[in-house]
Image (tube, rainbow, N blue to C red; front, top):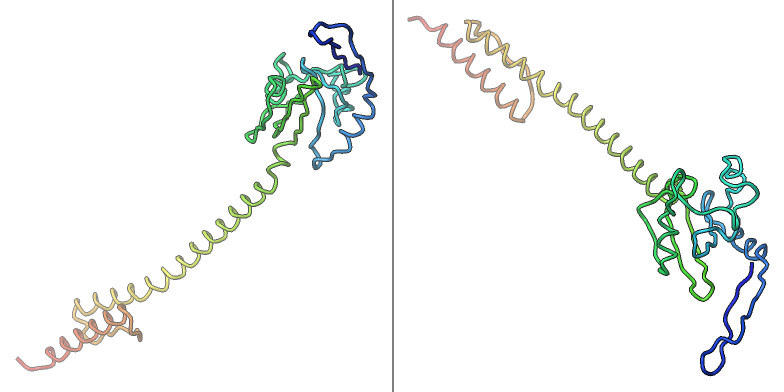
Length: 221
């Protein structure tokens, strides 16, 4: 890779050009050694949106015929099937720095989280990206855990409500049947329910009412 810069005299007139040759392989090694999980990568781009270093997915890109030999200086970082630069690249070459935490399509067509920084002194941009699924993996796991806990609690509440409902409805049904018998003239019927709660009070009231009817029925007219 060649980097050039004008040489100016005191008056500002260009009197020459300084050209420096940079070994891209050394820069590429540095970029490849920056590990961002299983799917993350960092790479350099130029002002036209072409990669200056190798993609960690170079072999996959070759199989897809996106590139022939390499990604450096051969691959323009666009959304697959379009001529549009990816969001990270288009924002970076504007000369800005920033990030996208919502996700955008990268040059593979995969949703990624991106971070970018433009270096005006060199005319390069540094891009760091990682697949959304991995980047938000912890959040997804936490969300799934919360949903699991919520589901288990909901099931528990339903089960408790079912058995609690049966526990409450059974004595009420029994009291109703006894009340029907008393109303039909069977004053010997009694509610069998020993408890100090509201249902127990109702049972006691029905039994007292049946006893009163029974006593009145025994008295001669």
